[in-house]
Length: 259
Ligand code: SAH
Image 1 (spheres, protein in one colour):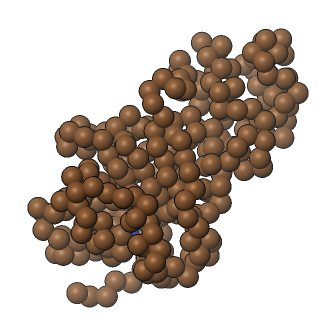
Image 2 (cartoon, protein in one colour):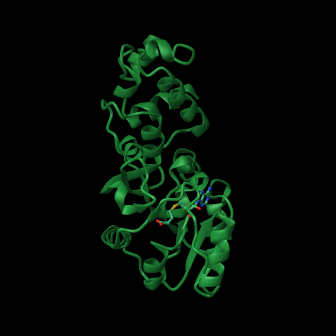
């Protein structure tokens, strides 16, 4: 097969460290019949060891050259290749067609990680778990606790849907070519239905965006157009708080008083 030249525009940094690869596959701990979807299999660093433990694997890959390689390398009986953009992929439909909940895995292209996480968050109810390699700073923001500098819109919106855990730090030299940033592996498990529940999720998202748009401002100012001081205080939120001091539960409570 022709050697593949890594493409920057597709965020291609291929995992080459055998120990890191083995550690990730162990952390995912697949069972033979699991419904696993790998986003961005690339040259197969995770794909091969995953397939050894699985009857079948679904992959979503954007790079046409890699799609062709995958189709040559694996039989359709073992692998279903979805050629296209994971950002536009309907994971809900795949889960419905396959009749199960998805386990999604990927060493993700870092240039699209935030929009991809938001896209995936919409499919929480048909997902069993997700394991992703991401830029370390993004993982820190995902799992940040209220009060920390990293706590922001990404933290609130993802913690609303998932329980998340940072599992493993990975240095640049585990990849070829090495990225400029450090990486980390994170696990996301959807919260049970109703555990945190906004009456109107669009409104919840809008409130969180508004609060963090000016994260240094007091909430009485940044949320002025939605809630007054009195109402904030009634809901147990000090009007002089800043966005990063509220918990996810606080945001849900505030959003639910708007409807
Ligand atoms: N999993 C491999 C490759 C990681 S590099 C490894 O660990 O070595 C990221 C991969 O995601 C590449 O294969 C790249 O082509 C693919 N990719 C980039 N953007 C994508 C998108 N929008 N949708 C699906 N795959 C994408």
